[in-house]
Length: 245
Image (cartoon, rainbow, N blue to C red; front, side, top):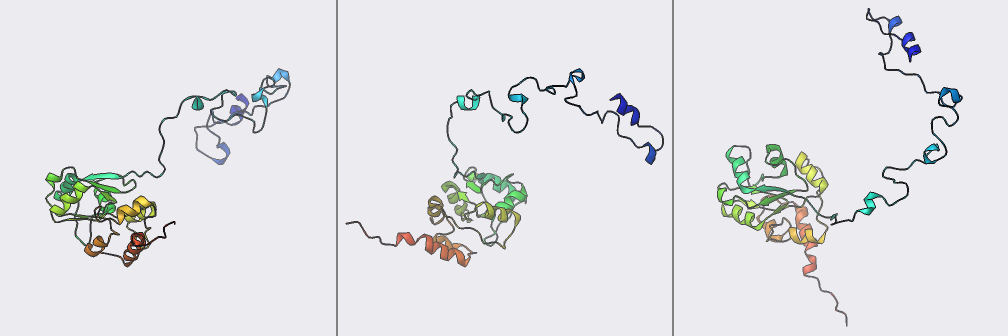
């Protein structure tokens, strides 16, 4: 180290090409292995005697290895499970929406309902998660007729919104469709529900699903693709199947 410091020494004078040098302490001499026992790193080159750590190459144990005994991760019992199909919705209450309308941060109309984009940009919610779920908490404070298209809505929220002259239509969003909705992209074709639970939800008028025949007749803005999807997804109700004899 002293030899390197003597050869490369930074000066406080004017910087020139001939006096450029690395910062003090930024360089160190290379460790020379296997150069005799007197060097202190001879014979086994500092690796000790034969053993698992004395080998070179890709024979090193991975993180969590405990010498062959059962690891602590396997010794602890597992509790519960993780549902891969579970969705986490961002809850929004009616009293919060009314406060945002009173302060002028939210507006809605039948042609331009409140979506996840408006809620996120106005600060009413901080993350959309897998969609917006409208809840009926604070329904007594709702005075404005709001028009909103969340992913899900509770029955109490639907009754409270429609009582004031508003409308609720639940629309299916997958990950890509929700991203396009938040960013305002309209050039992509949005996905249709494929799982049984989603099909039953969004084709039911009780849930104000946007693919139910009643919703298609009442919604001010309806895509022609939704009508064909509604007929395809509800075809099972009118189909007859041969009974086994």
